[in-house]
Image (cartoon, rainbow, N blue to C red; front, side):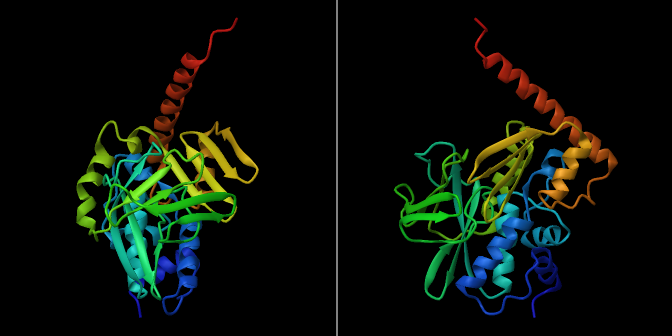
Length: 286
């Protein structure tokens, strides 16, 4: 019998107790997690970043909230361990350049060993794989997206994951050595509070399903799937908050009227700054 918090977590995922660990059950759990627990930074945007203690994350997920990689993979790892899986946490790095820069510490990666096979089971990338990937060099197709795994050249014994084309972070690298949540505390503080942190400067929500990715950056809602990339601007707070609940499955019971007003004002101000910067980059009319 697992603790009630994990029963509630499974209920959020819509998954009954999956039984003994297996590769099939791991895939079911990861797919459900990506579909139902969004990558989002509401707490950071409101100036009250949630902690990354795994049980706290599990309780927040059960209550309908999401988080970013330290929350998502931290909570998912705890759930998997409660279900009997052999889970290893790794210090990792997500990078904006295809060359990467090693395990910089701005990401928590998970590997899971089931029946003698090791898998990358990363529920914290936002736009990453829908199902676990084997820790084996190769190219893997999932839905409309293609991923690649290869041994890391900068982290001995570690691995490099190449995300699908078009991702703002095309490479994730992780070290072989096991990590604990304490290894991410300092970076979580920086990402949650530093003025130049992208989690403070930009609102983001992402959700993965079998056919594609939903993403909300600021006030721009996008969808990436086999048909390409479509996007539209959300013009009212009612529409914006409706998308958070209806598309991303984010329960907003923890976001009161004052929070909503502050969040909409912050997102709108950033949107106007983005538009102004885009106008400056446009070539002058002939």
